[in-house]
Image (tube, rainbow, N blue to C red; front, side, top):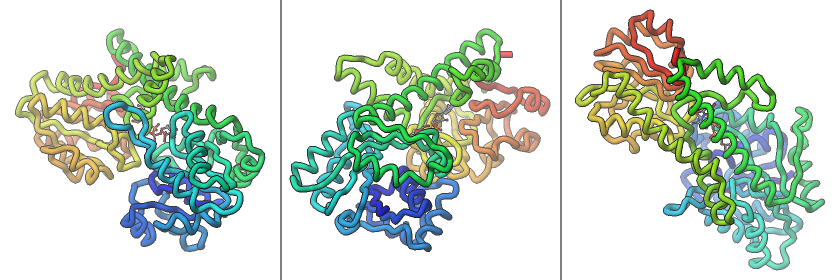
Length: 435
Ligand code: UGA
C-alpha cells in the first residue's frame, strides 16, 4: 500500500515507520522544515527506544521517506493518515483542531483516485464528519472515504505497542475503506490482533473513553494508596489482590504522583468539556481530573513533611523529571508541579534526569541540573524519586548517604522496599505503604 502520514510527531512518526517496516511504502509529511531535514539526516526529534534504528533501516531500504510537500505524495496514496497535533485549546480545554482541518483542506486539493483519509490524531467525536465535509466542500469531485483509526500506543513502548496492539479500532461503514484498512493492517494479523470495525463516531469516542478509563483507574489506586497510609495497609498488595480479578485487570494499578503526559491530562479534559456541552456530564472524569491536579501538588507537601517540615533554604534532590521513563517528554509531568511546590516552600532544587534535561531546562528556572543522581544529592536534605527510570532502581545508597546533608529518601514510585533503604540509615517514605 502507498501511505502518506501527515504530521511527524510521536504518533505520526512511530506509525509511519512501523507501516514501512511491515513493507508498505510510506511518506511522512510535516510542515516543519527543520524537523524534516533532521529526519532525512537520520536524526530523530524525540527519544523513543528503538525508533532511530527502525527509521534508519526503512529509509535505507527505500520504504520510508520524509518531505514537506504534501500534494505530490497524496496524489499517489491509497491512504492518507492525519496524525497532526490536537493540543488543548487555550482557555476552554477543548481540543484544538485547526491543524486537522488545515490538513483536510490540503488533502482535498491533492487527492487523485479513490483515497482513504484516516484520522489517527485523537479527535473529538464528530471531527471525522467535519473532515469529510471540508474535503467535499473544497473538492466536490474527490473520491475519498474518511475513517477514524485511533492509536493506543504508549510513549516509551511505542514500537512494540504499535506492532502488537491489543486491538485496532477502525471507524468506517464503507466497504472500500474497510478493504484498504484491512490490507494496511494485515501484517499484524499473524499476531492475531483483533480488528474492531465500528462507525466513525463510535471509534472516535473509544479513544477518549479508553484514556479516561485508564486515568480513572490510576486515580482510583492513588486514592486507595492515600487510604493505605492512614490505615497501615500496603497499596501494592491491594493492587495485586484486586488486579488478579480479570474483571479489574492488573495493569495501570501502580500508585504514584499522579498521571501526566501528552495524552491523559489533555484527553480527560476534552472529554469533560464535550460531555458538558452535550448536557451529559461525566462526573467521574471531572473528579478524576481534579483529584489528579491536587495530587501533584500534594506530592511536594509530602516531600516537605519527609524532610522535617521546613525546607526553607535547604536543598532537595529530584530524580526523574519526565512524565514517565524512556521518554524525554516533559508535558504535564508531575515533576513540574512538585518542583514548583518545593521552590515555593523555599528549597533549592537539584535535579537529574537521564533523557529529559534539555526539555526540562526552559520549564524549570532556578533548578540546578546535574549529571548524575549522586551529583544531584550533594548537600540535599532529602532525595525524591519522581520518575521510575531503571537506573534509579539500584542506586548506591551508601554513596548517596555520604554526599547528602540528611539521609531522607522519598520514593514516589515505590521502586524500593523499606528494609533495604532503612538498612542504609535512610528515613524512607513511599506511596501507600503504611506498614
Ligand atoms: C497513554 C495511553 O496509555 C496509551 O494507550 C495512549 O495511546 C496514549 O496515552 C495516547 O493517547 O496517545 P502515555 O501517555 O504514553 O500513553 O503513557 P502511559 O504509560 O499511559 O502513562 C501515562 C501516565 O500515567 C504517566 O504519568 C504514568 O506515570 C502514569 N501511570 C501509568 C501511573 O501513575 N500508574 C500506572 O499504573 C500507569
